[in-house]
Length: 211
Image (tube, rainbow, N blue to C red):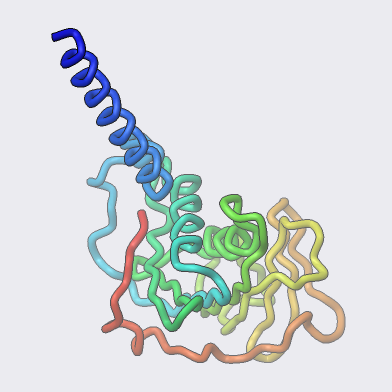
């Protein structure tokens, strides 16, 4: 009888350990807790047309998922500032779009976060594109109304900027501190190139959305 009780006890302990392990591994790809997000009543319900597009290269699917969840954990605590949609283009290459749009300043933070992700021990190959329409935070006169390409060059050691090249090849460095947005003299760090993909062509592809 005693031996049977011991066996049953060990079985329950094994089940508890297994469930705990599953929850721990699942938590790596989920928000920290339900309280880590605002009410779902604040979720946007209508899509907003925009051309913000990010291409990330040379990254595994599970790694880019971790990075996107990490970004949402950081920026979606009080409101849903970003709802990125991840689309696989080919092995180790992904597109990210924003069907509900994203304000320009948060978009710049997003590019920087993907370049220097907290979840990985290396930088990612990240390029973004957008048309700058508004007078929202982070928009300076030199880029307003322009089609732009966003990136971070390897020479940047501050890790607190995003670089912009306009479609007429004017270069800017947008620092996140107040007053750190400057126009670069001479040629930009990278010349403007149009994205290889058009958002409307990606609409029918399978995706995963992050909140």
